[in-house]
Image 1 (spheres, rainbow, N blue to C red):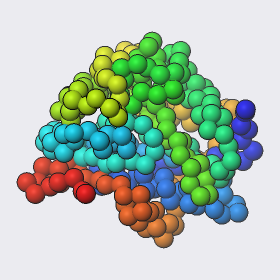
Image 2 (cartoon, one colour):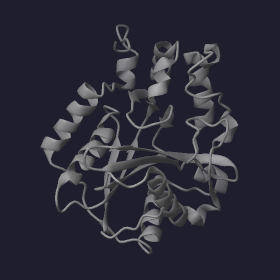
Image 3 (cartoon, one colour):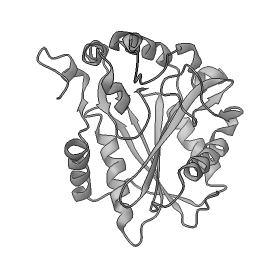
Length: 280
């Protein structure tokens, strides 16, 4: 099943976040709520968070999660429990996050994945031949991992809201030891002690790479943003626009994620406080 864009995408960059790591997800949620408007257009929202562990629901079952987060807080990592699928993903200033939002709740899951995969293939082809498919041993491994030379550089997860569909993805652009970070995180959090309901089967940090590391070029997040926009707009209608969403929707989305969905978020400074504990 194929999906065709009939309206221009708005290309919206909300910048770099360093405070509450839930904030960029709140912006995604608010944009999805904005899809309720009769004149709603699809959106590509770009952002960076420096730096935090973006946990999946499955990670909440790790037996020593609290201790692991405390230790990573000492290394400058915040944390957030996200609402989209998958397991833990480390974000930092060298990772570009992108959300594709559609005013459509009927698009098939596979069709949406395949559409965004085509966009990525077009937008990133300058950096090498990209493959899609699970990279065994990588963190947050899944069917829609994308890799260069067998090394995972990112992955995708999607979910539906009442008014729209969101596909969220991250791209490892600049080189960092993210695979090693995740090996250490899961070792500290007790993955090996779990017999059932593991967030991931195992982790091999050598399965993860970055565009800069795999190409041997000094590629930056700004470079990738520019090249993505230039390449993608040759094939799809895209109009750059300032990030804008009504403040009321932002506040409603903050309440929805934090209160109704029960997502938590902490900065590194909060994680290292002596009285900090995981909620509930």
